[in-house]
Image 1 (cartoon, rainbow, N blue to C red):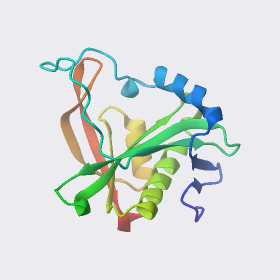
Image 2 (image 1 turned 180 degrees about the horizontal axis):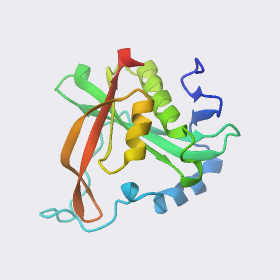
Image 3 (image 1 turned 135 degrees about the vertical axis):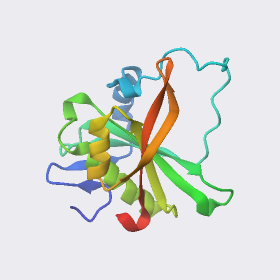
Image 4 (image 1 turned 180 degrees about the vertical axis):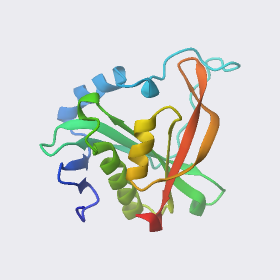
Length: 177
């Protein structure tokens, strides 16, 4: 593994900010989800009318996942979550999307490991967490290869495509990486 938190592996995986040349491609990717776990369409949950989404906490971000030739192959993102009223109780929740043509090559595991290192290097958080659908076995394996530990099932935690979905929760702590 490379010592730099934004590159790793012999099949080099990089994390980098999106540039102007990436804008059209990233917009097209957002409009065309590459898996059912990324399709946020469908009707709102029961009892929810047309309320605006909650305002996100500040401190989130995203990066492009790129291959050895610096071609975009996906994205990673993060946002803060609180487990108590003080900043010491803040963690980062991460997400990833790797396009189908780049899946199965270890980029997802490397990108999620690099993102945890990046967040531990650039923030004071003690915990980086991720969750994925209980049926998304490939992502569960990627998180485990990246050093995240399975913590449990979050029942009915995500509304997607007209129904509630259970998620598997994973996390790594500062001393795990």
